[in-house]
Figure 1: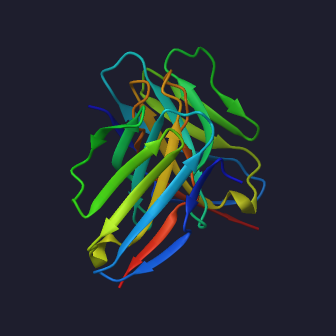
Figure 2: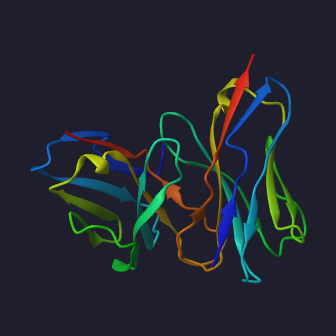
Length: 114
Length: 114
């Protein structure tokens, strides 16, 4: 069992739908991340939150909107997505202190855009 | 800028044999951390092992060990006594500042046969 919980595990949505991905961790980590991963490729960083504030946005299209309501929760709001946005979306968290803190990943949400 | 290079797209090994997965890195920072993750086909990213740039000894975690050669900027993962369950994609990653997102290599797919 992973310590980072992502819901839903699978999501199929049309290009006009609005949906949200959720991520929760209770390890007291103050850094949280969203990644997008295509099959057989490495994870691509999308957003980083540090102390609940957005610190990095890797030029992600505005149809992806992140939100960090508190130190344990991270959301990714989706609207008007394109077929190429179909991918595995991974959430991760880590302690902010020290180089050696691993990122703990959730199991991911497999997103399919029709 | 930091960069991770994994030059082996795929590796094949028989059960009970040892296998080495290659990773080279590039950074101008004197202090950095190196990580290896395993990603089975189910999608979760599993943290395996960590090596700090100032660590005098190579890291080991059970059947996993890291062959760290600082002068050559390499951090190869050695898996001893391979098992069928080791079949997965393996990513090498690094960070040079605490609290920042990991930078991943392209990954190596390991296939273990009986």
